[in-house]
Length: 424
Image (cartoon, rainbow, N blue to C red; front, side):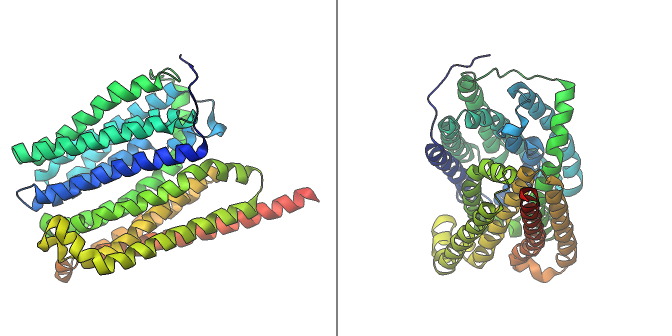
């Protein structure tokens, strides 16, 4: 094992690097959803890519298994990097099996090929998260950021060239997978070796223990991811990929809101866990209030801006046909903010050592989304108004958030009372 010391970054420097790298990667992936419309010969390519992304998000959620908060927490330092790498490999195999059966019942056969290569891309994208966890533990998120920048630009260029040359979505997405895997092997593995060994350690006891710790948070995140994926797929199956393609083209840029929410809270997970252990409930309340206010202000500003400039911007990017659907944008922004907040509460419950609450919240949101989708999408009137997707997502996530924040308030009150009692 290599333990060569490198210069560590401050929290502020790590935050800046992480934000820059993540934002570049996010923008590059968003541009892919733009280019599939502008460079592709058929708008149905956008719908097929949206289906692949929906399944890919579920695939990535299974592979990640919400292990990153565990990996970077000092509370679980008995696990080695080899344990996490082995765990990620096993989770990837499991994700392939689950998504295969999921595709059997929910994905049109014509989309299977693009779904398969997109999941290969997400496999590389998710695997490198373990190596970036090592970077974070060693306060070197600049390494992770550089990887994200290289991979982001690489997949954007490869996707564009392949779509131009072959006009084939499967080939274009396959090129993204090849670029991602190449960068992980050539850059990320080499950099991580500076801190520790990167060979998998298939210790059965450690794998079982790690799975038990991660499982509740994984179920919660899978359910939350599926709220969006299932709602979109119900719509696509009911009204076709072209109708879904228009919605996907408009809604995909809103992912920046979810990303910004994650940038806001990701550096806070360690301090939140420490404040919980130290019974600093007042500081925790302030953190949650600031978080909610920040997300509310950010979302309100973006939603108001989209109401005024959404149509000309979308028209300039995608063309007039997509720009006519700009009315989807404001609600899509709010729905995406709700998505980010739901993932925030999941990680908070993990930090509190109460991940089962996040599981209950996520399962309830998903059940509500499935019920509403099955009820609403039998009505042909919604074929021309995909805003119903946003409404279903908002209602489902809103219910989950209400439940989660009531539980957080209750936990903080109980923690405060215990602290007072122990001081007497």
